[in-house]
Length: 455
Image 1: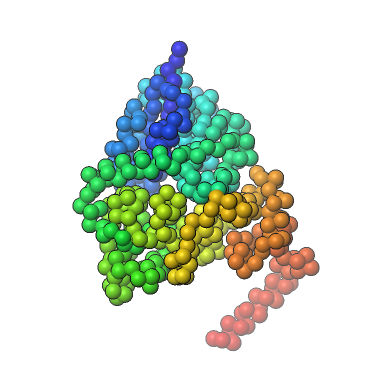
Image 2: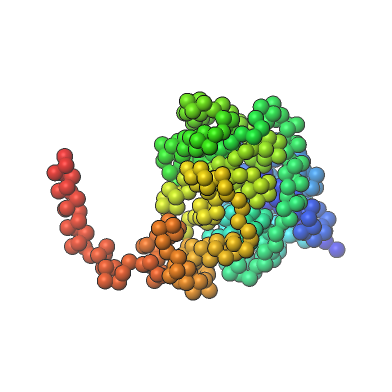
């Protein structure tokens, strides 16, 4: 009988921790071998350290029989932009089986982000292997980004996800009838405790310097994604410092994105000192969850980082958001998959600028989430991918009819509602205006005359 080998594809330490928790919880069938395929998706992988070299990974290593580098396997191609040509798939499967010592093993694939490479590339190479998809963030609550095709969607057996928003069920892959299963929070926090201990052993000097009970600010480097400008990102970070100081925090810790420029922290330090707060920069690439356990922040502030929800749902740490309204306005196209994490954070968490709301906030009950957040996300999800989720049209129409207000308009775009024929669209009698050449020409002349007059 052929050996049964499970291939686990991961690109982040957080994702690998999710896999370890799922293994500990018995989410996978027994196997003869379990191989962790490590993928470094950084823009320039050659100068970026893969997560298996990060502090804390040693705690996860024992769950897997062997580590494999996907980057080395397909070198010099980039993991995020390469997939085998259809005619070359048999050659690639023979090559990979030989390189990874798989022989005639019966292979099972456990992958993240199935809509894109490298998951699609691995799925294409092992074209007969059953698929389990795991989600390590908030995007699992949103729609599937791309159509997968019959050679992929018919092979997906299960979606594993963390219970970051109790009461909310994932929309991801639901159009294919894929069942979802929660990775137990107890198993995940246990794994994170192991990672935290290993991180302290590997980078203890930086981590022990972090004061307990501080306000922890999470940087995301959004300007690198083209979502906002560098100046706007600096102002967003400054607003975090000001908001934390206004709430009375005199110890502020900033955890920058690993790829963000080092000099970005200088204005933040100056602002914190001006406001009478001590500012600490955490340069060690440790998970935020390590700090949750080792220094227990009094407050966690961010834009739409998944770590905000782990702080709230798994560690009961107060949280606050900033910049989400700007992001909801800037995200393009409407289908941008970041829209769902931003929507969740904006809808659930208090605004840092609203001090009373931050001080009084508590996690909503699963019942309230199901009653209030689920209809909103179904409406947003339908607007993002209407062809994939036609069953959600009636629910979207009902939500838009009864809930469009100044508070909910940021989640939607009038142009998008118009193109889909949904409530809130541009009235039919005015719909001709943007497409009328004469009207546009007159408007341009009027703007030109106004500028000339002002000049």
